[in-house]
Every structure is written in structure tokens, then in C-alpha cells.
Figure 1 (cartoon, rainbow, N blue to C red):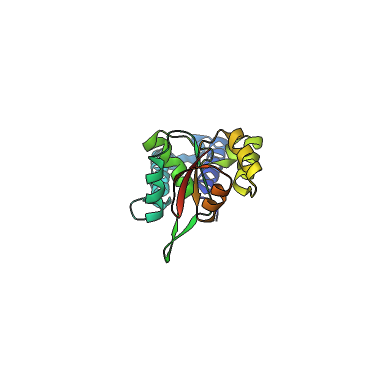
Figure 2 (cartoon, one colour; figure 1 turned 90 degrees about the vertical axis):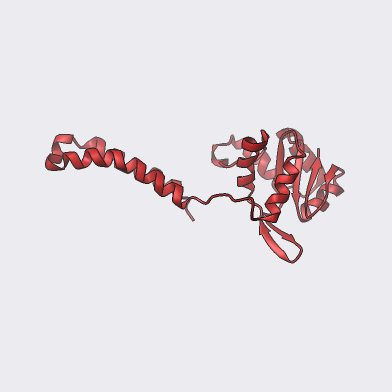
Length: 181
């Protein structure tokens, strides 16, 4: 699936290119329509984007409520490790990592090693972040945590057992756990 902003940027670039190649006199009787569309076009695009972008509603999902509870126990840089799908009891829930990474700085003044837009990251930082999320041995995990400056790790499902085996300090335990580096 292509993110909706990619379409918006493509449309904006293409329409700007075409617009700059035409002189306003070339439009003749359509001159007023062009002026009106210049005003209404951006407003319509904002409304379109606001309607189609998913809103993040943490009040309905018990797994994300649990992560928000754990965020209250952190006071430094954190990361979420593990799958986005969390099994709590008999039910599967989704923990939107990017949503949490956006929520934490706004409501808890926390920074994360991850982020919403990995394409904007430095390539070496991105490789370290990818290495951290794929790490399956304790030495590499601790090395990546130190290099990225991560203090708190929110683990999901089986990552909790892995973090405990690595000897990290357990702060809170459940299907979604919190450890300190």
C-alpha cells in the first residue's frame, strides 16, 4: 500500500510543474477558475488527507493502553521491540509502534530511538536500529542499545523473555514488559 501522502506530493509536484509552465493569460476565460482553484485546492487536499489518514485511538486497545501505562514509568529514551500484534489472553491486539513513537514526545516529553519516518534517518543510524530490532543475541542487543542511547525497552510477547535472559533490569512484567538498560 502506498501512503496517501505520496499521492498528495506527486499531485502537488505535477500540478505545480504544469502551472508554472503556463502563463495566466493563456487561460483566457478560465482565469477566474484558476484563481479560485488556487485557493480551494490546498483546502480540499488538507480535508482529503485529514479524512483518509488513520487516527490513532489509544482508548479502545488494551495493548496500547498497557504501553501508555509503561511510558509513565520511563523518563529517558526508549524503544519498542517485538511484533505489532500482541496476544493478551485469547485476543490479538495491535500496538502501533509509530503511533506510540509520535504520542510519547507530545504527551510524555520522551524521545525514542525509533521514529515515524525511517527514510529521513542517517543510514548508519538506520542500520543500528534495524540491527537492534533483529538482534537475537544479548551481546549485540546491549551493543546496539548503548550505541543508540536507549535506556528503556518496551518488549512485546516473546521479546520479554529474551530481554530477561540478557540480564536487563526488569521494571514491569506482563505480555508487554518494560526493561531498563
